[in-house]
Amino acid sequence: MSSLVNAIPVEVEYLDGKREAVQLARLSIRQLYLFCTHLAAVAGPDLAALCTGRTLDWIDTLTPQSFAVLHRRCTELNFPKAAEVAKGDPRLAAKLMPFLQDQQMLMLIAMGATLGLDLNDSSKAPPASESKEEATSDASTSPPSGSAASSPSASASAPGTS
Image (cartoon, rainbow, N blue to C red; front, top):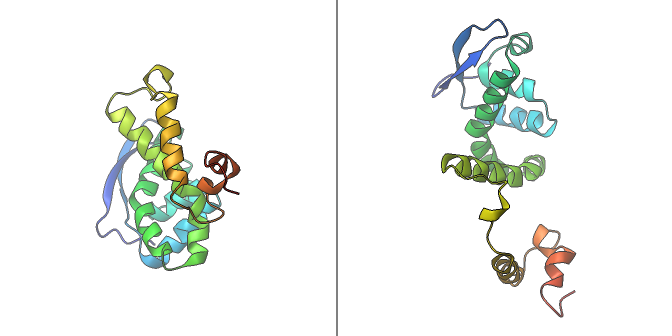
């Protein structure tokens, strides 16, 4: 099971109302491959079981809110290390690629919540003119083909490119 060296505690709540602090492991290199497989398969319970060293039956005893916190913390703890390992393994990188943008979005949401910002409030959004200027400057940096920045919408902002 998971090595609990350098583990971090997370409090969980059971369906019966009891609470317990469980240890989330920082996964080994071999376990990170399994972590990425579970992440790519949207197998949250398996991922949480891997990080806690507990069984899937144990996961079923948690409240939905507690499981959500546990799953988020498992991902926060191990995703950065998995991304580092993926730099040297194209197949692992392919499994993580869809989550890189999601992780950045989650970090922005968390930062906004920490600062007390409502990210759904459009009155606090930057003016549209600022966003267009940023998109134009980003499009001129020649992103690799197939990236989001080389999409037709990005090409449309740079006249004469195809």
